[in-house]
Length: 113
Image (cartoon, rainbow, N blue to C red; front, side, top):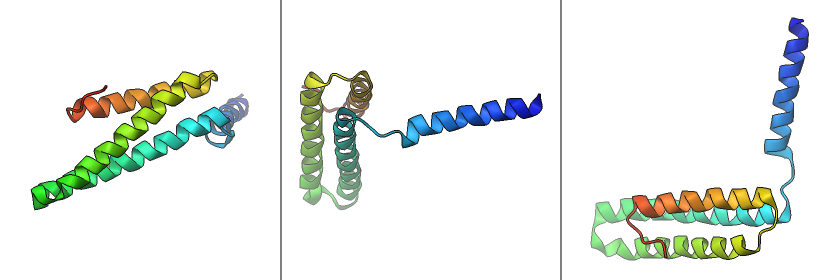
């Protein structure tokens, strides 16, 4: 009985692992993933620019503006992509990314327009 329980648990873990990590993404999911990666890169650039501006002063404010411009660009790309998404998994992934972006905007006093 114990062996059967262990086999079932391992099977469930394997199934989850395949579906979550190894299952290939569809075309729409890949597009959302690409925008998510762009957002993450822009977010890291923003955080670095804020740290740098805090330490050095106003001479590096252009770096912060450039990072915000990239973040807004990814937001626009996501909203345009969301209009044409058809697959439920891609729509869910896009909604999660939009929620993450809205949280970033709110925390950093940026206006979502």
